[in-house]
Length: 177
Length: 107
Image (tube, rainbow over all chains, first blue to last red):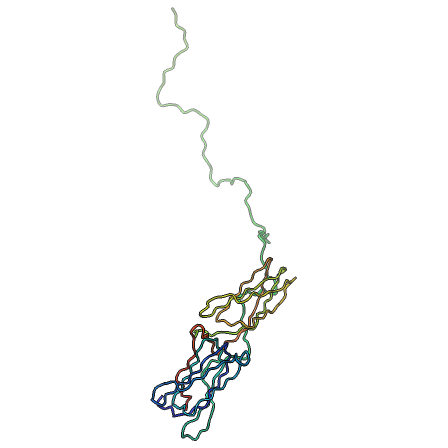
């Protein structure tokens, strides 16, 4: 800041489009070492032709300072595409020159953005129908035949066992009277 | 001023298939006014896939939103829109102003 040299300002050029009346205010830090309003002018691009155009605002000869601030205010919509200031260093060897005001660039051409739509592929994708595939090889399955055991099984003969205790048996003899 | 830049929109091109055609409602978001309807664009009926470009001239917005409606089936295959950001856009009616920093111009 302290290294800025004293300058004289002659013009402000704006590339803009306003929908109505706006006021451009020019502030500088001299005289008085404080930013103060030095000049203001009404701008209205609608007054001549609709749309974007260059507007050049001439500044009085006493607009000087090390620093400058621009302010655009009013009740209209504004599209500001660029701004420059014609200035020169007081007492310097340099002559008048245009200095750009830092404004983000408006591209001349329109850029392209994709809509969030999934693209439809040109080719068709493959999907399997729900049919069980037939294997190339044959599978093995057991026939329903009981296997023959390796060892011998035991079976009882059909004979009654002899009981350990004796039992009484009634003889079939008729009683004599 | 809005934190995100306002964009100017040029047109939108959509690849689609819609036997009854479809309407594209374009909504725009701006500070102060919020999300509002801008215009409804008509995409003509098509037999098979076709590409159609609809103009968006005059549309300025921080954000846009598209909504497609139809009385029939619509197949959207893809689409683009063209835009460019404006250096500075502000709406004085919303109390917005433009003001620079203190400029020394490097001299």
